[in-house]
Every structure is written in structure tokens, then in C-alpha cells.
Image (cartoon, rainbow, N blue to C red; front, side):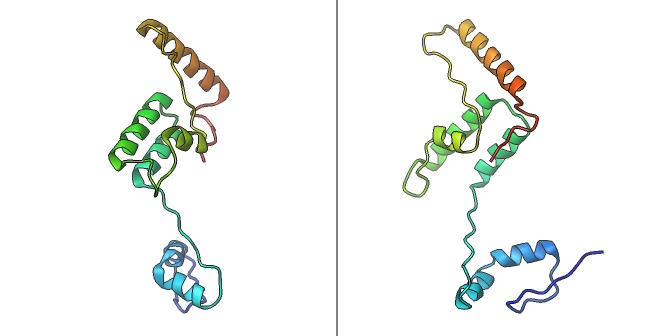
Length: 133
């Protein structure tokens, strides 16, 4: 059984999901602002960034997450005035680890470094309860 509620703005018979969407609607926000309430500001992430976060919550390889972020940032021409964060700042703000491979490493040393960092991250809980914000 679905519980239905009424919104104080006059919209009636809404399910929980409908109420959530309704509260984000332009009509509800305008009503709320006119009534002297605090206008709800909906901050939506880019769908591509949401996809990266979803992959991070599943424990995807941090190197792949960084590649996805670089690709997305390049396609959107970020950072800019609308999205001022750099890739590193965005990854850090969402608690996604960054693996820095020393520039003087040859390919074998680089692979060994990445493998040891991944082992360290897995032991620290990456992919199992790691807090992705």
C-alpha cells in the first residue's frame, strides 16, 4: 500500500516519490519563495559525474575513475566559471583516492607501484564501505 500525502502548496494525493519530485519542481519552489519560506535550491551533479560516483561506490579501479573524470572534464571544457573545481579537487572532495605514479618509473616499476597502492587501498576498505560523498 502506498501512503499518499498532500503538499501545503495545494498539490494533493502525492506518493513519497511524487512528493520528492514535486518539492523540486519550479511551481513548488516559486510557491515556497512567495510564502516566505526558504527557497529550495536543487544542486544536481552532471550525469557523467554521477556515473563516476556510482562506479566508485561499487569499488571500481581508482585509475579508471580518474580516466573517466579526465575525459568528462575535457569534453565539458572544465574547469571554468560554472564548474571551477579541477579534476584532483573533485576527486578529493568525493573521497576518491588518487594514485600518483612516480614520473621516473619505468613501465614495470609503475605497474608494481599501482599494484601495491591498490592492495593498500583494498586493505583500507576500498570497494567495501568506503565513504564516497
